[in-house]
Image (cartoon, rainbow, N blue to C red):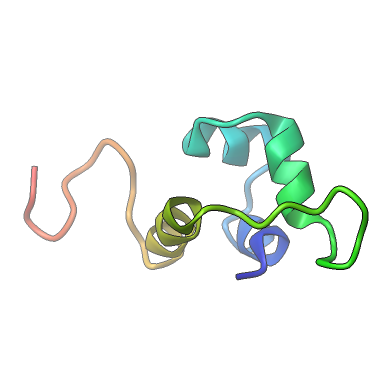
Length: 68
């Protein structure tokens, strides 16, 4: 998953994206680098799944698909 493209599609700043993922802005920056770049880090499976949920319309703090 291209986390930089996902963050941009969600129209979130690096700090907003980091806050949603409960991680540092440095982690988001490492996810956003090209895979062959020094310092690149692959996001965890849960980070990718959460990002996909956000792209699919999930809004934290609200009900989702009838689940509270």
